[in-house]
Image (cartoon, rainbow, N blue to C red; front, side):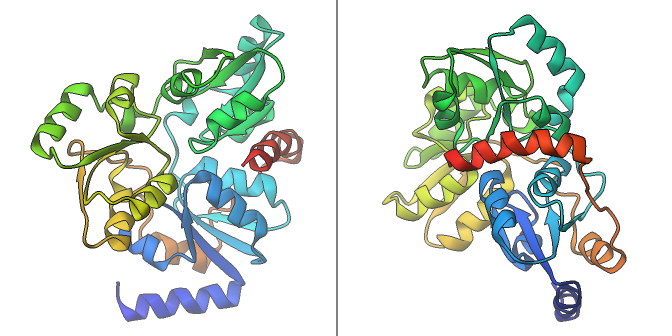
Length: 301
């Protein structure tokens, strides 16, 4: 990262009254330039509290939508307009409405990795960090969970609720399998295995800890272990190493990459800030309904 680029971004931030926020899966240089980094829940809270009138979001589209839902008076710029989430796109609001009609007594919990329109048809949102707490707090015994079947299955194993799962998944986590895990453990027998709950049940079963990305950072920071096998998108390994230079980190397998998360570069960041392009604004009729679901999620924590 050149000094000229750093200086240009600093000048643009000041002139725009902006804050740069980045998800833990972003490129290292993007994480370094950001004012705030975190997982979906942390970033939703941060963007709801900071005073900046413009939020430059380094992530994917549904995340910028969530910021817009909570901050309708702020300008929300997504640093790469084509950065989406294949899992979020697996279910539409119309599909969810049809599904709800088959289970009129059930409450919908939508993973925050979903579109604003799907959130608007949900009772409450959740993240990988608070999914169990959210589901267990919902009135009633039956839950429709969208869109991630693996996170939903993990929550179901920690709840007495009847959870009906939509068959969506994150391609990065879903393709990690037990054979790869066993090989990684054989190669690094001294290492703890920590995985994201978006992984398959067979992978979660083998893990020493099941954690969101920010929970991983806190867990490793306080752990006496010196080596860890990581079961999530490889972007998290950068802040793990940065915070714990004396510890060792190994991905379960090569290729744990979300290509949409890697679309943001310093060049696209500067371009977005210079032009004001890629503004994300949720229509008010959707925003109001979605806001209730997101605010319930944040209140539960």
